[in-house]
Length: 214
Image (cartoon, rainbow, N blue to C red; front, side, top):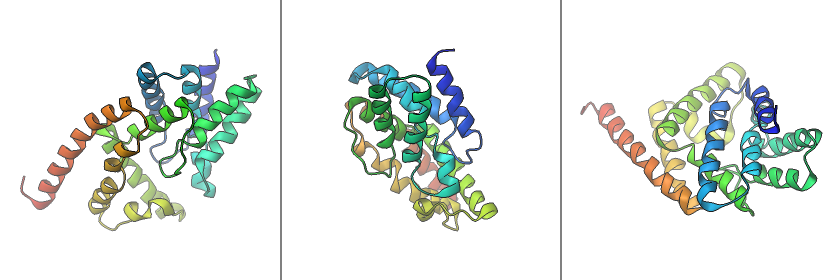
């Protein structure tokens, strides 16, 4: 088994208990998006694939202990890749991508691979899959608080609003529609605008349905 597939299995073992939307489906989609963006923007596909596969391996630890899953993921990734025999320079490049990928982290990526990973991660919050992830994640995080008392403070503005539809609308204003201005590459911005079309249509229909118009 090559390193890519070993890494995929390793990531899957960490995300098996992931209660929200940072599952292997998300990981695989981000990997695919990275490679698509790479075709037009350049970068090292090997670094991108490993960074994409490992970028969220610390998310369950964040749920359990708080803190920053990007930092946890970078540490876990570095240890795994070191044991796998990857060179120091490559490990540092991959860890650097992971450290700057997070939407709310506010960190600026300084390599083309890091910029692409950050974009790909954000793009997965858009379009039809973005709507699914938002609803799924909100439900999962509300249940997590109900069953364990764990409060994801960074999400409380939208996740814990009493009316879930109101919370969803607030989330949409807070995150998806702000993403295009925060993307790093022209390829990613083009993809984002296409994906936002279906989100706008969905929100219009949702509002009409809630009002009883349709």
